[in-house]
Length: 446
Image: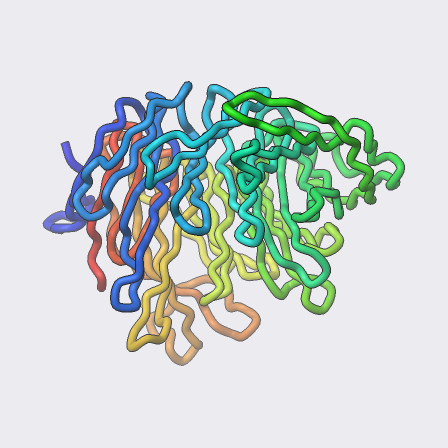
């Protein structure tokens, strides 16, 4: 069976190819692109599955260029080095793997203390790989120290880490933001791994702590030199201490935070937007960690979908287990919401793509997946009151513009979907619990 459109008579989406990975896929596809006549075109697609296989697939025709058998199931989405020659992926066998795409081999791996379910993030400035683990540690890996060994620094957290790390270059420091399943959100110095601030979003309620309560002994930083998969540990003490912001959303965080630039309390500040499983989305000041605003979904159901900030329209998109996709402005005001036809949970992040006309951004497309396998493609625009002759839309933003939407396409996959799709140049890549990675073509215009 193939994905089926829900609009009678529609010829879209068109299946370009599919690849079987031997077991269900929960990871999102990593798509490596190349520039062709000034336009980005998908070149390679990398994804793993519960079978423990990681496959590298040609985006054009679905040819499997390389396949790797890892030591456990793969729920982690792969990340690529700056030059695109190496991809990194976490595995349920407790190892982080580095795959050499040119040599088509496993270059190295390091061992953690539990499952790596989080997706790695590569710091573009240093090339270091950041990944959280279920052993309650953050691992910061420096591949540049090879061949002598891979240097690993660890930072201990209160709970397991499922969300990916987010980097941001602030005015005073390069920051890394990490959320754990005990409700802690921490801002680290991306160079030293020292704590700049920490916000508690745990279920125990609001609490304030002095800097000396930020127990440095239990947050030690460890350095490992790893060669040929052997690890030697030299433990050091993280001597950085900071105050804990008085912030509480009431629940742990599975969703990766997102950064909204230019919206902090200080000049040159920014927001860190965090979604929690109690249905609350809150904004933290990126410099201090203090709470700026908080939005609660009316259903009270969990938000596992990572918020996605789209700069062209200045909106924050996220899904919820109530099956509703919502758009907020940067002040936390609800601009738009819509319950999908399926009504089932939206567990993964929506993906956005800017539509240009004559070289100028004219609209934004968003694709999102319901857990039952329905995928919806929507086009968003912001219109003035005079332009919005058809009515509709939610609240106006600070400029008096209203966010309006147009449905492009809705279809159903042949299995459940727990991951985010990737949308590039009219081509959608999505992993499915029917064991397949799919490549689908969608119309360029409505």
